[in-house]
Image (cartoon, rainbow, N blue to C red; front, side, top):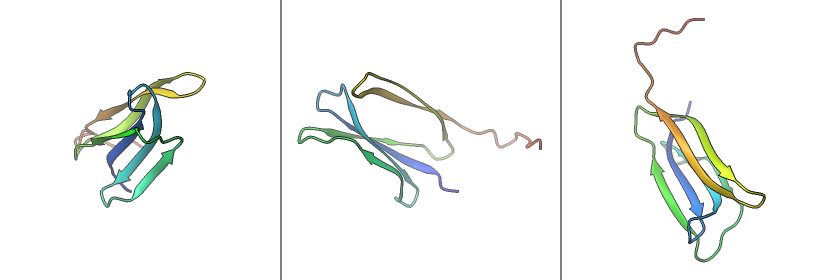
Length: 85
């Protein structure tokens, strides 16, 4: 199973719209590579997911045209937790 190590978000120059979203694993391979729109003044923001943490959720907001905000919910799994199956 691949670990999500890096997230890139393509934003409008003003930072009020999200135009794309990329997730890469530890080997630098794309797990998600989506760009809906890109302009000459768009910027990419990089977020590194610390080792030992995992993305367990995403939250955000949108209007009828664009994704306006996006956040990642991270957690650190408890290595002492028991798997009950």
